[in-house]
Amino acid sequence: MRLFLFMLLLSGSSYAYGQQTTQDDMKLIYVYDALCGWCYGFSPVITAFHKNHREELDFEVLSGGMITGGRIGPIGEVAGYISQAYKDVERATGVIFGQSFLKDILEEGSAIFTSIPPAVALTVFKQHQPRQAVAFAARLQKAIYYDGIAPTDYEAYGQLAAEFGLDPSSFVAEMKSNENLQRAREEFQRASGFGVTGFPTVLLQQNGRMVVLARGYVPLSRLEAAYQQAME
Image (cartoon, rainbow, N blue to C red; front, side, top):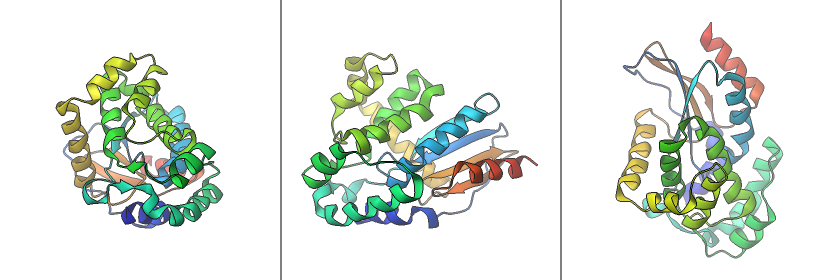
């Protein structure tokens, strides 16, 4: 859980550089975590960037696995710290953390924070509607940090999928399969393999290399400028 706080506060400053890739097709890879506070703040930025460039770029969203293993635990263990840290995200990005999260989750304290269920939800969703992955990732974060769903509430993920036209019962059943759990773990490994050590990270796969467009939160203007520079 301490790592969650570190990422919430410092994710804008701890990133590794890109690496070689054998694929030549140009693609935008967005590495995020559903429980990353700065990723929540970045959601409007990546959503706008996707709208601006979805016709010219393929987009892929990967979950980074920020809260896994021994880092999983009740949010109440660090509620005092987060209750101040989230304000930094609001001031810097303009997003709002909802009262349902602040009261029912953060203040109540018993909700288990784990990146695994929302990562599994994303892997299932991408099998059905891969072109809507950016929108679904943003919806996952709004559900957690504004609507106040518990990260372990599988039924809530089914209802989110229904907003995109998917059957909620089938979606939840797919989430509970070992195959999709393994897919989520493989995403964590891929993110690590790209050299990503914090979230959000935006990578442009171009001409056999990975170019880092953003490390941590940046406004849309900076992301657009980095993209245009990479394209020159």
